[in-house]
Length: 206
Image (cartoon, rainbow, N blue to C red; front, side, top):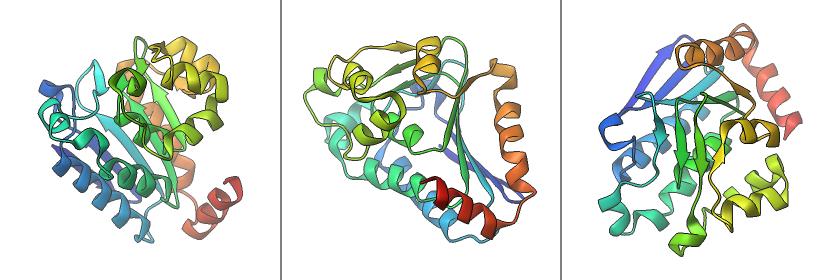
């Protein structure tokens, strides 16, 4: 359900559970964290793309049954987003559809976010009665500002892709058939670069 493809210095990770809206189980989160942590130790890694299978939803967040068992508040979410944020290379979230719930954290942890027309962004923790992942509010506010972060987190508003683009939550919009090529094009300069220089540039942007 987590697919990893390595193409030279480019790693592409796909959430592949489209029949369940790419909702995440504890096992999937552990595998995602393991992949990202391994990437941080790989001197050949130059770019990292995270995407989802299917044409409507990047991820609906926690699997329903797993959420009932406590996954919604598991520290695994923070481990995943922390591992992605710590990658010493360019990371791109290629959002093939709607982003919801706990999956928000892994997209916020990426350096860039691309999305398809019609995608929506929804993080209803206030409505559901639990806190967001610890690092998410800060990363979200850094992108869109405190008021808009509260619009998403406290007012539980569902944000459309055009509004997300205007706010800075999304960096570019691409048609579904062009999404992965657009992500790969953004990664190409890094694939041609020196890993040590890439790490230094990313550190300077922090």
